[in-house]
Image 1 (cartoon, one colour):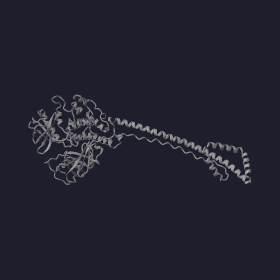
Image 2 (spheres, helix red, strand yellow; image 1 turned 30 degrees about the vertical axis):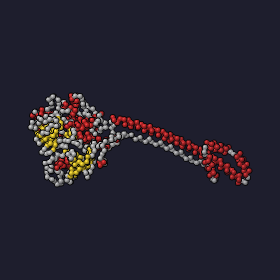
Image 3 (cartoon, rainbow, N blue to C red; image 1 turned 180 degrees about the vertical axis):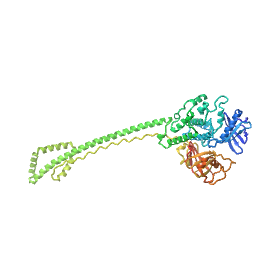
Image 4 (cartoon, rainbow, N blue to C red; image 1 turned 120 degrees about the vertical axis):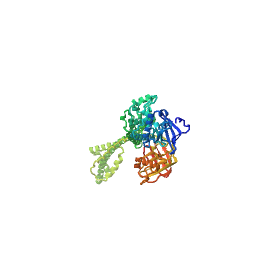
Amino acid sequence: MTNLTNDSSSSFQKIGNYKIERHIASGGMAAVYLAVDESLQRQVALKVMLPALAKDADFVRRFQREARAAARLEHPNIVRIYETGLTPAQEPFIAMQYIEGDSLQEALAQLAEQGKVYPTMQALWLVKQVAQALDVAHQAGIVHRDLKPSNILLRRDGTPVLTDLGIATVQGETRLTQTGNIIGTPHYMSPEQVLGKTVDGRSDIYSLGIVLYELLAGQVPFDADSAVAILHQQAYETPPPLNSKRQGLSSQTLLVVNTCLQKKPEQRYQSAAHMVAALEAAIAAEATDRYAVPVAAAYAPTQLDAAPVAAAEKEEKRGYLWLLLLLIPLFLIIFLLFLWQNANAERQALAQQATIVAMASTITSQTQEANQQIAGVGAEEGEEVSEAAAAETTPDQAQAAGQSTAVADQAEGADGAAQETAVAILAMTETAVSMPTLTPLPTNTPLPTNTSIPTITYTPAPTPCSISVNSAFAGSHTPQLGCATSGATAGVWMAQETFENGRMIWRSDNDIIYTIYNNGTWAAYDDIWVEGDPAYSCGSEQTPPTPQRGFGKIWCTYANVRTGLGYATAGEAGVNGTIQQFENGFIIRPDGGSVRALNYNGSWR
């Protein structure tokens, strides 16, 4: 194997059943090649230890021991190890599952070039999958020790797969390389690693917290010009608060990152399972903040939103000014109406008094004339009598007439009403005139209470998506999925099978099996069945029916899949389908089947 080079154009060679196709990458410990297992006709990643390390017999034994331990791990987010052995040159190698896709490090670099960061929900979902993988490894007694974005591979659908489990453990046992540098990556090392203390699973939790910080902030919390300076920061300095790098995150998300990055292991999550639970709470909090409450309560503006916020405040002040200008005339009108009502009431009262006095005087005069006519007095005599009667008017009558004149002068516009009333009274017999009861003035209508002014909420304008949602998927797309990252791909070969409590779908484009449960959750698994494996992984076909081949391998291997799906209700069927990827998930529809939107937070609709 010493003649293998890192040149991808070098001639292909074989190691046992593995035919090397090309070089993929090299690190400080091994070179990785893409190879084909000719006996099973599947691609594998072949990791071959560098010759310098292969000379240490103890190191080789530890390497093989840890590789065999890691090979026993079964989890969809852990790279499967198929075989370990020695090359003819006695260089250890590992044949492992080949993941077609980029590493998380490459994905972060691409986002950085575009000036973007990971969507919050996708970042939380991704880290949760890695934490679940760590939990399985830690329970098996395996600590990663070198957890970083380059050791997290991404399938084509964005599902993370953790690699190099066990290998870094052996590498870490050497403590120092030949140049005297600590093994590990300074940006992601825990304080106990930096200080040379004993490490356990909580060290991986710290490193994964650094990864989550980087996903959300677009940068690592500690960086400097030298590795020594970074190591000092990891051991002794407090990381910059995440909300100073990215606003709008829920308090639960900030709590997860802060807990992971505690300097003392006992102050972090004490297991990866605890971290998974905290991440699930953060995912729920983010979903609630963004989709279940008013925008004003959920949206925390970033620095880019400063101008819109200022404009919104200005509009709010302008709204108050217009309201004040409208209220001033309203209050003035109400006040004038109040004055007019009082003045009108006084005028009506004066008019009524004038009318009554005038009627009394008129009745007296008419009575005297009637008495004269009855006595047979002629018109002239009546006139004389009338004049005499007028001359003989008593002081009281004169005073009453004077009062009537004075009051009438004060009541403008009341003469007509007085005359009409006098005509009506002439038809009556002479009776004592009683003062009518004045109608009470209406009480002032209370001013309306001020209506509370609604709070002006700022709704951020959605960022337009550059790629349209396929028309067949429009009814299934939700804001949680985000923008489409590619157009819909039709004609993708799939297989599907229905179960009592859900279904399985296999995609040929990424060789992944999806278990979709009727309770609204889903999970993804590598298709681990290969030609030559038994058709029924659980044994012979059972009744009720059990799935076979790829579906059967997953169903028989994972107890949670068996209990979650139940027994098969129909056989496996092949069909073409359509798929479209989005920022936070994808939508899939087997031809003739239902459309399903799978969100990276583990839910579907």
